[in-house]
Image (cartoon, rainbow, N blue to C red; front, side, top):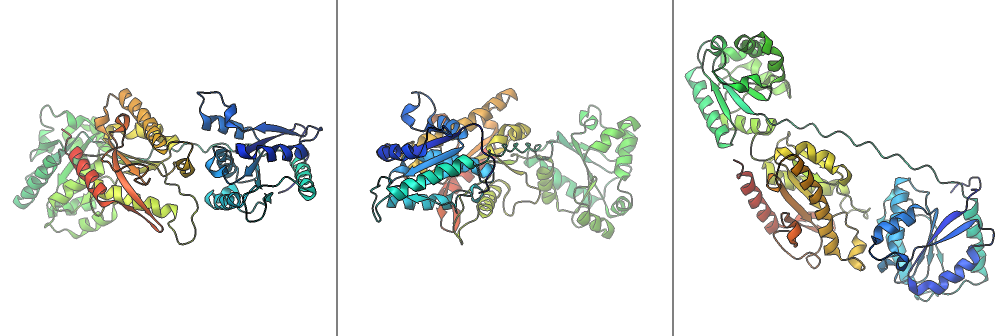
Length: 514
């Protein structure tokens, strides 16, 4: 690490250790802290924390104020709350791309050495802890630490001098700005199913129109029908949807009309302006228009346009009636479900070669959720959004009124917390309770209810930690349907019985919308 100019203020040195190594720590500090006051001793003992305070939050504040953290890693260190000091320091170093705070590992036993080596591989590579040197003070092959001898004292003095010459820490990085909510199609008020603007639709096209209307009605989509000749007759009396940009105009076409529309895509919009008046043209321009040549009708230029136009307005479609209805539901937010909102990017500690990468894990969970919500295969224009916990309120507010499916998971729970000190079930329940409280506040503000959301808890913890259940095992969070995911060395797999139960309840919820 490069040296910089000496700091005028003393460096804060946080001492992180379990109580059974107190005697060694005192002997070590006699050699580290001199009368010059260049280093300031800061204790990290949790018994100094005021009863009732949040232990992890207090530890985080201590680590945040430290320039150096010296971890005295004995056989019990990894199971002791003191290990949180090192984990939080690693998080800070990850944000700072390594270098600060300085981490000094002092190894006090064989088991401590093994724990430290595992920890180096588990933390993100950005923490830059994998290649830093440690210093052993224990009898080889044992967990018995030894007090510093002459060589050990010389090493401590060298550490002291090196710490005192280190430059000031880099300024903290500014947090990245929160990106705007994803562009999700607005939910439309209804579909206006247009007859022929000037004449009448052929009988075969009329039958396809009836099939499309039936499919849309079965999906719960409001449909208003305009009869043939609507250009001169105007909108039916009382049809307020014609004045709204949130209506979708669906124009069925015979082959001859499709040829004309392929040459002049604005043809239907012009007919609508004639029917509604020229003053309505801005609203017509903002409204989606779908030109539909039903399956069985043939027109080459129109079919080519349908394959090339993508998200243009008007959209060209050549589907059969049921497929058209399905596309309309997905494209314009109709139907019985909203977007899949998956809370938090799936983050996994760096794994050894050949095991699952974080991107692979995320893709598998995405595919499972999309399959349950959208069917197989999921459409390309599915409404799936992933976001971090800090962005939750920002994103959830943008889709809360679209009947979203909200999924959160336990993959970011600190695994060492399950080894003692903190109750893992309490941690898990607390995580979901916090997220739920934020969601409920937004739902109340928008005059919505928890029933307007489908709640999925994706649980990877062992059944010995979280017992098998249909919902989370606590009354305060029992709205969350438990989707159990099993971890394997090279894969994630959703437990099939759990998947079926959640899928059945999701389908029931989708069908409950009036």
